[in-house]
Image (tube, rainbow, N blue to C red):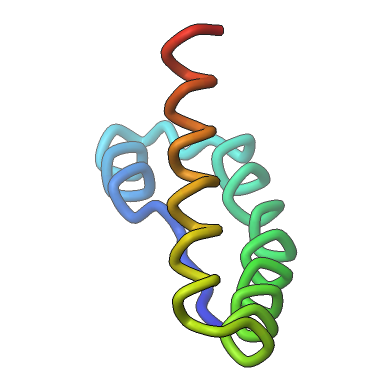
Length: 71
């Protein structure tokens, strides 16, 4: 399982002495989402043919871009 914390926030706020609990809560609350996303990615990779997988990923990215552009 890959767990990532935003290190730039940590160094910036510890350097200023302003370490904020809200930043840690936000970052730590994303861990279950990253874990579920990793499991979903593994399942998709093993159950869907590569060409279909690439097509779905392309469609999802295109849909997200269109959503960001017009809404």
